[in-house]
Structures are given as C-alpha cells and as structure tokens.
Image (cartoon, rainbow, N blue to C red; front, side):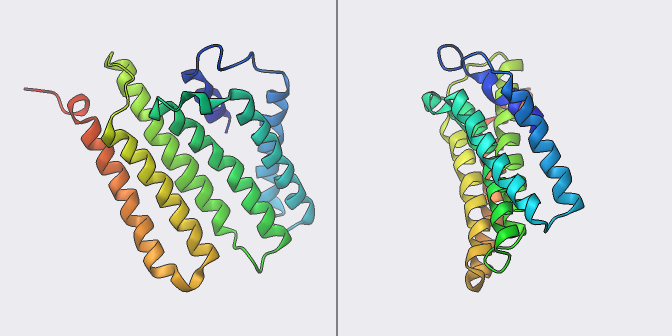
Length: 197
C-alpha cells in the first residue's frame, strides 16, 4: 500500500494533485495495522470494523488524487484502478467478517492479488519501460487491452465467490484473461523488451 500510494499519484501533474495532507501518513499507518490485525484475529468483529474504516480512508486518499482526470493516459488510469482494488479488498474483507455465510475471505484476497498487484504490476512496468527508454507516454491499443483484460480477470474471479454455482467457467475465464493481459503487454512493449538486431 505504501509503495502503491507513493507511485500512483506520481503520474499526475498539477492541477490534478493537491499537496498531500498529513492525514495520508495516518491512512498508511491505519491500513498496515488493519492488515496485521487481520492476520492475528481474522474473524474478530473489531477487525471487520477496522477493515471498513480502512476502506473509507483509502477512498478519501484516492479522491484526493483525482485520477479520473487522467483518462487519456491508460497507464496512469490503470495505476489508480489498481490502487482502487486495495479499497475494494478492505471492503470485501469487512463484509466477510460480518457476514461469512454470504462472502468468502478469498474475495478480498483476489481483489488484492489479481486486482491490485496484477493491475499495478502491468501499469508500473509500462510506465517505467517508457520512462527508461525515453518513449512517449502515449496510450496504445494492446497496452490498454492488457489493463482492461486484467480488470475483467479480477471481476470474473470475484464473481466466482458470489456465484459459486458458475465457478468453473468463471475461473477459466479469469485464468485466460490473466494470460491474455500479460500477452497483450508483451505485444505492446515487444520493441522495448527485445533488442532490435
């Protein structure tokens, strides 16, 4: 979270980002404490309340960045969507703790791993490759397709938790889209990854 919270707003330029308020330090600290509490007492009601508060504080953080103004840059928008999955993960974990019969803990885990880690990994790699190769930060169809595929991958995996009867096809769809996302990423950045002879 701390790394994502530091990287995500970097792609934005004034007037899109206001100076970070001191409360962001508290949001980071709170979120880390909630994660530790979830490991020590995963089913405690207080942990559920802490997760709900962490989700709310992360929403405040994302709103402060105003990343929706960067729709023209798919890499920057993907950073914000990836970070948004952290918020979703906290919310899903809170729902699981308060209503375990309705939602499994795996929903939160997949929001964090597929959603946050998967999306942000692609977006950060795309941004760093363009930066270090001194290429323009222009959007490309394959790169945008990779970000969209990763987002749908996460959504379809979360639906497995909500619709267990349809789990087989949705899990297959999710796995396929994971491979498609990284395949499109390789297509988009093949010239930067493979030296031209």
